[in-house]
Amino acid sequence: HLQALIFDVDGTLAETERDGHRVAFNRAFAEAGLPWEWSIELYGDLLEVAGGKERIQFYLDCVSAAPIQSPTQSNVVLPRSGGDRIRWITALHTAKISHYKQLLREGIIPPRPGVQRLLQQARSQGVQLAIATTSAPDNAIALLETAFAPNAPSWFEVIAAGDIVPAKKPAPDIYYYVLQALNLEPQHCLVIEDSPQGLQAALKAGLKTVVTVNNYTRHHDFSGAALVLDHLGEPDCPFEVIAGNAGD
Ligand code: XBP
Ligand code: MG
Image 1 (cartoon, rainbow, N blue to C red):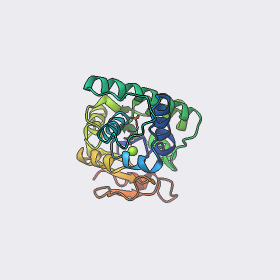
Image 2 (image 1 turned 90 degrees about the vertical axis):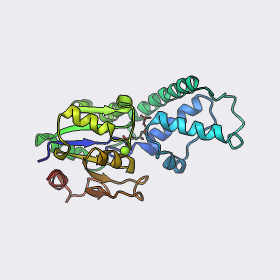
Image 3 (image 1 turned 60 degrees about the horizontal axis):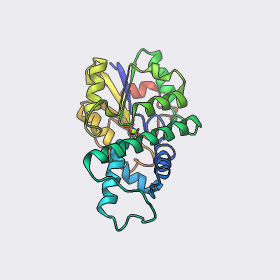
Image 4 (image 1 turned 45 degrees about the horizontal axis):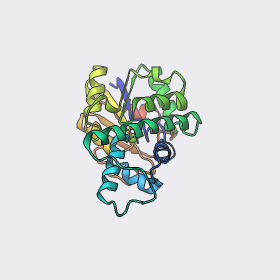
């Protein structure tokens, strides 16, 4: 039977991407004097690259490969060599994290429908909770504290985030990490995800997965998912239905 629910964070616990992470990236870019602005539409494409640092690196590579298209009004010299690039990306991402946490403190990101209830029902039935996210640990914890409850991080047995594993989703590593930390077999756990990258990561780790789609992910391919829902807020979709999809 079901022993643990493992949650993705961004797009699953809350709609953090469009008005949270994207805006924070843009603020960090502006602050650094970069002429970069990620539109809502462009950001949808950039979400294919999981991880904030990885996303910045991907964009930097695109801009560097096509200098003709890059705006000329900036005085910022883009880094060239390996070490410089990594330091530059890390500094930009650190600034982005503070902008993101500031946005969260403003209370603009609520939990997705039904998530709070599912967390409470799981806890009251003795089902353990865990987090498996590509996002930085600071960001995941700040979201739990601001959108759910100041002590919400303590509800989770394991919060596995960001660089804790070298290979991010769609690699299964973060889910292997969580399974090991929980000391549970995959058949006793159920994952909630919102993206194809997250679903692939969970499936590769042998985990049954419920997908709750959002505007950025609804048209993607979710074959292999145990269940694909708009959200967890349907009155007829209580804990029992979700839990019924787990295990054998
Ligand atoms: C979603 C992501 C993250 C965030 C940015 O992670 O891909 O990269 O967009 O996060 P998940 P950071 O769905 O696995 O929670 O800037 O904190 O890396
Ligand atoms: Mg996600």
